[in-house]
Amino acid sequence: MDMQVSFLDRLFDSGLLIDTGVEGLYGRSGEFEGVIAAFERLIDSIGGADGAEAIRFPPGMNRAFFEQSGYMKSFPQLAGTVHSFCGCELDHISLLKCMEEGGDWTEGQKATEIVLTPAACYPLYPTVAKRGELPMTGGLYDLQSYCFRHEPSNDPARQQLFRMREYVRMGTQAQVTEFRQQWMDRGVKMMEDLGLSVEIDVANDPFFGRAGKLLVNNQRDQNLKFELLIPVTSEVKKTACMSFNYHQDSFGLKWGLNLEGGEVAHTACVGFGLERIALALFAAHGLDTKLWPANVRKVLWG
Amino acid sequence: MNETIRNLLAKVGGLPVAADGLADEADLYAAGLSSFASVQLMLGLEEAFDIEFPDSLLNRKSFASIAAIEKTVATILSSQKAA
Image 1 (spheres, rainbow over the protein chains, first blue to last red):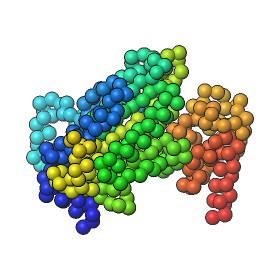
Image 2: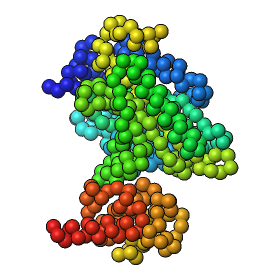
Image 3: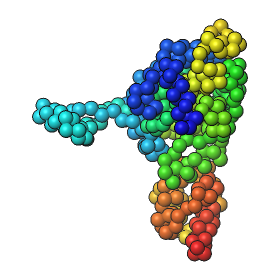
């Protein structure tokens, strides 16, 4: 049995996470949620003064926008689409019969207009584009959503449904790269204040297939993605708890995000993996928050 | 080879300028070649020249200009012949 399973088992035994029978799909206890709520307040206390516009989308997005995003080009293996029964009464009878016989009843399910949100900021771009040109000061947005990625695993830090808190900056290249650097500095300080050992490294997204290798190399060569890494289940293979992504003008071009005067907007996003940060805290300080170091408790709960 | 590459670039490159007008050394990324277009270009080159890009050549430099692509394809062709 490896380290990951044992940390997951300890989380189950302590009741912090609740087994549902599906890898990467867990319930959370009140204590676990309390840590996430406290961490989100910490984010607010640091980022709040920046004046971001808060928007909350549900964890599903418009399928048309999802298609337009190009997600299926890069990550077809991770996407989750919502399907429903759309048949008549006769179809219903066949469906029940199929289920009773243990057949594949899902075969007849039809795609709905909803796709599970893969990252909290995905629904934002078309929403902002619809409003028209951005002012020269650009835009700053605060998002949080449950996100879905189909990657079953017994690593508790790799869940299929998890929450991502994000800030997204749109504007000139200088504005968005400064934003990204600011949050890298803030992120390191936040984690250090929480007694977590942290490092920042260049990273890449899990692009699909052999052609994806080219995209991975492109992304790394251009330093487009950085991750803030903290040990959760392993000291050697650390877990990305924050990511800092610079999209250049690719989302601006894709969605028609323009600054006043017509210049294409550059965009960047900074994401917090909320469950991963909670897990990093539990891994570092133990499974009982009452026994966490006083200075860490003070940062989180005052 | 140069002409095949230019034809492919015109077909899948998605450049806002005509591929014909580009100098061999012109920076294709500056001319508007996107990451996804470079993937299409790579797949197109593999088919056109019956080659397979090794991981070591799957990078931005390989597709930086028409001259760079020619050099990359020539490298792969000669290593495939040697193998």
